Amino acid sequence: MKPARIHVVTLALGLHLACASLGLAARAEEQTAGAATVKASVPKEAERPPIRSRWDVSLYGFAELDFMHDSTQSYAESANATPIARRGTYAGDRAQVVATAKNSRLGFKVQAPEYAHLNASAIFELDFFGNQPLDTSQNDSSVFGTVRVRHAYFKLATPLVDVLAGQYHDLYGWGGSGFYPSSVAYLGLPGQIYHRNPQLRLSKTVGGSSLSVEMAVAAVRPVMRHSELPDFQAGARVALGGWQGAASQGAAQPQLVPLSIGISAVGRKFVIPQFIGVPRNSQTVYGWGAAVNVAVPIVPVTSLEDRGNALTLTAEYSRGTGIADLYTGTTAGAKFPELANPGRLQPPPVYPQDVDGGLVTFDADLRAKTYNFSGFVVGAQYYLPVARGRVWVSANYGQIALDNMLLLTPAASWGAVYEKARYFDANLFVEPTPATLVGASFQSTTQTYGDGAEPNNIRVQLSLLFFL
Image (cartoon, rainbow, N blue to C red; front, side, top):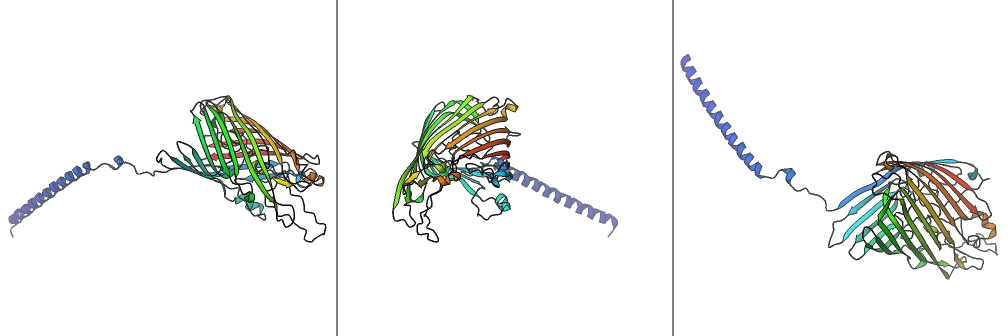
C-alpha cells in the first residue's frame, strides 16, 4: 500500500475511535447525572432517625485503695464492732498494716420505658467483701476478694404507691436517704444502724419540692428462718427541699441533701429451741427497735458547683432489743451459755443454736431473753472556702451500750463481753478532680468490758477513690 493511502486509513480509524470515546463519555456523564438524581432523592444516612434501645442502662461505682495502720491486731479490713484485743495479750500489744482494694464497687442501673403511667427500674451493685474459707491465706484473702451482693432490687413507681422488691438498705434507720455521716472509715460506725436486707417495701411520697412527706412499710427477711414471720419495718420522713446542704455519705462524692427528719421502727419474732441438748419444745420472744435520724444544713448551699463554707450536721439515736445485727453485726462477744453436764458426758452436750449471736440468750432461770441496745452517732462536715468547697473536713462521735449484757452473762465470763463502745474520728477529704477523691482519717475506738478493762484501738487510714 502506498504511504499516502496508509495515512488516510490511519486518520479515518483515529476519527472513528475518537467519536466512539466521545459517545462513551457522554453516556457515562448521563448515567452519572441520573445516579446523582436518584441519590439525591434518598435521605442521607445522618438524616435517618437513630436506632436506640428503649432501655436506659447506666454504669456506676468506684475503684478504691485503702491503707490502714492499727495500734492492735484486732481487725481485718473493716473495724465496725469487732472486739478489741486487750493490752497484755499478743494481739493487743502489737500493731499491723492492712492494704486492700476490696471496698471497690460496681453497679448497674436499668430504667425501663414508661408503660401506662408505670415506671420500672432496677439496681444491681456488687463489692468484693464476700465470705471466704477460714483457711484462706493472707495473700488470697487480700488479693482475691470474693464478689458480694450489696444491692439487687427493682422499683415500680405508680401513681398510687411505689414498690421496692429486693435487697436494699433497711427502712429502719432510713438507710441511703441522706442521714449517713461523712467518714473515711467503713460504715457503719459503732452505734450506727447500717444494714441491708431482702425486703418488699411499699412507700408513698406526698407534697412537692419545697416540702415532702414519705411514708413506708416493709416486710423484711426474718431475723431467723424459724421465726415463722418476716421482720416488719415502718417509717416516716419529712424533707424541706428549699433548705439544702452539701453532704457526703461515708467516703463518697457530695450530694445535695434537704433539711430532713426520719423516724422508723422494727419488730421481729424469735422462736428458739429450749435450752437442752435434744430439745422438743421452743420458747418465743420478741425484739423491737425505734430510731430517729436528722440531717441539718446549718449553712445551706444551692449548688454543688460551689459548696464552699457549707456546714451540715447529721445525727441518729436508736434504742431496742434483739437488734444486734442491725448495728453491722454487733455481738459484743455475747454467746449462749454452756449446757450443764452433771454426768460428765463425752463429748459434752451442745446446745443446737439456730440464731445468730448477740441477739438472744437464756437467763439463770433458762428463760429466753433478748439483749438491749441503745446507740447514737453525731457528725459534722464542713466544706472549706477553698477550690469551691472541694476540700472538706468531718468529725463523728458514736456510742453503743448494752444495759443488760452483764445481767445475762455469768460473772465468770464478764471478761469476754463488752457493755459499751465509744468511737471518734476526724477526716480530711480532697477532691483533685470531679472523678477522684483522697481521704485521710484518724479513728479511735474504746470498749468497756464487763470486768472493767477498756482496750483501745487507734486506726489511721488513707483512701484513694476513682468514681465511674
